[in-house]
Length: 134
Image (cartoon, rainbow, N blue to C red; front, side):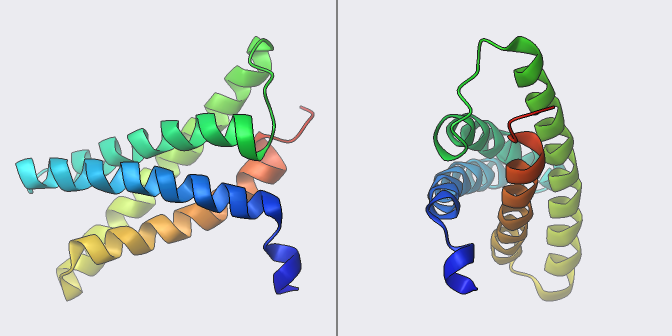
């Protein structure tokens, strides 16, 4: 069962996710260092940068969905991805805010939230956003 879960597609998604995670966390660290009191803005902007990195790379590489000339399909994918991004921002903000107030360690909980986000985004992307029909 574990071998079936770790397919080449998932491993590609995971590798792209690591790149997006790097972009997300570097952005977060820079913004949070500049003004730690703007946690919501820091989280939202960092997730947005990671999102755009991930969306483009996963569309083209992981899910081999290169139909950029099909405007409606790409718009629907972007719309669903942005809705997912909105959910991810809200989840990440409350997860990081709540747990860091109790235990401290803002960055640790930011990483944990990113792990949860990465897992459910793979399944939503694979079975809803980048499926081959609408």
